[in-house]
Length: 179
Image 1 (cartoon, helix red, strand yellow):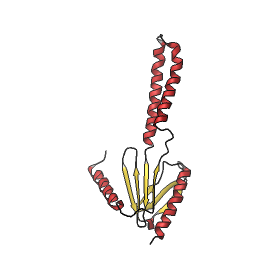
Image 2: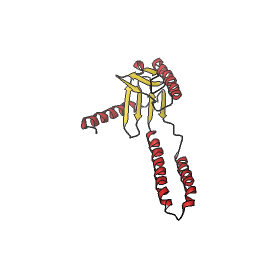
Image 3: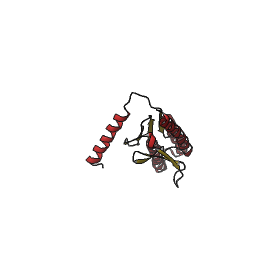
């Protein structure tokens, strides 16, 4: 549970971030990184429907017998478990990073699946991008500046992180070269 001090610090950070990014000039570069979701809502309904149908076909043999109830309960538990696992995965994949780069400022907003938002502001002149291979992540991308180091696109594939690294490097070069 968060304390009042942590809540007030988070609120102050959010207000400072909003004030710093509420600008009239358009950013030189802007991107929103989101996790890939291969199964949409319609596909989810179809998948659960097909699985239920496939489970029901063998049950037709046992219609009218008490054995039906012995099989039906584990089948219902299996479908419910599958539904919960797919639903939970979809919720966990609702994370995103919103990155905006101006010539005098970089703003990154991370929104987690639980709705918690983290903000980061830095001067593009002092930002350093790092891409390393770690035991758990290939092409692990971080940015250092403004007194902090943050992860960028940890939910992306290694190839997507490499592409984002290249794009961010180019955008930071343009920001540093701007008068």
